[in-house]
Image 1 (cartoon, rainbow, N blue to C red):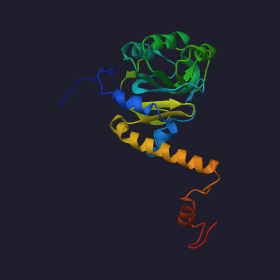
Image 2 (cartoon, rainbow, N blue to C red):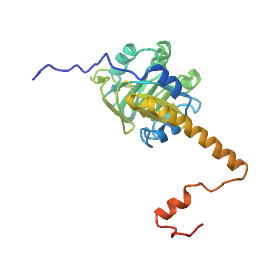
Image 3 (cartoon, rainbow, N blue to C red):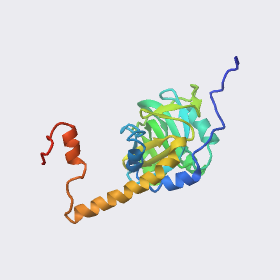
Image 4 (cartoon, helix red, strand yellow):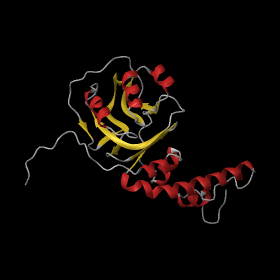
Length: 231
């Protein structure tokens, strides 16, 4: 049995394919979450700094101790173009772990966005910058920079287990994470769901079929309606 100590920094991992990212970016996070089994959405505390922000890409995961951003600085220089930094900051709001200088650096490095289960700062400047940033809020206080963490290990972010390379998609509603191995399989389902929803909305606008087809069956299954009974 090996007794080698594993490094806290992993440099190599398999990313969700770029073509899958491209196709997934066309769908709302809500659609992807629905077809992925109604799971994978990060807690609502993690929200975009501006509703217009969108992101899609492979997760580059970082675990930090609350209030310390040492490992984020290291991860920024390790990540590849198109990666999304996903930070397990334990939901801490006592200080900001990223601000204008770091986010501008992320943009210049070609990263696709940042998802932080912690606070950020310089929010007015970040909104003007337009680079996608999702966080639990803001705090003007700065972080420390000396506590070790881990890079590209599985993390928990917003209550969801995320592994390096998983698909991350975010929009005004929030962020969904889909396992790398599963990501491609949900794309056709997402396209079908979008088509069905458009047809449903067209019916509603036309004043037709206002009651969902599944409603009475579900009410009977729940014991609200008896067999043969209708609304």
